[in-house]
Length: 117
Length: 121
Image (cartoon, rainbow over the protein chains, first blue to last red):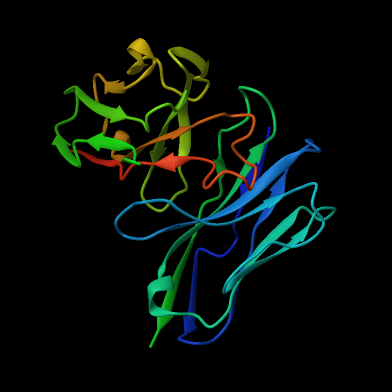
């Protein structure tokens, strides 16, 4: 069974600074995907960034980037130039690549990020 | 395109009562998921449908929870009788193709609704 662990329940950062959220996972699968989702108080789950495990290059999306260490099963999220609108709960999630049993997301416990002015 | 619709947005009931939640996925999405998100935790999958068949319900408490997806479109999740520990947000999500959902060619692997917040008193 796959597990996802986020060891930082809460983080805070000053506006315009950089913050890194940690995530580790455990799986015996060789083909899978990893994601970071943002959940503001509205409860809407918003995809921030994804990483396909077979790609060695770390994914980037504007101010968001990941450090994907496949051997260490680590998948951290770096937010550069933090903005007040980044304040939210962040979830790391795992998805295996498989017909039918694929598609479902397994989430970590979440990290509550506060961006302070 | 219209997003995943869920109702109601909020529900307050007493323990031992029953409650039902409704979800209408994005048109054409064959796969539908119900997640339970307890306050301060990550969402946990309760049940996954492929069209109107159940793919995974291993974490659904079947003595009190039931779900159906008649005609392979919208779905209902029911709790009967409710317990205090059922207080949570219930999220519905849908996806087009579970095999391809993780690929970067898809805008989002899963499309989520805004959830129903259930409070059991």
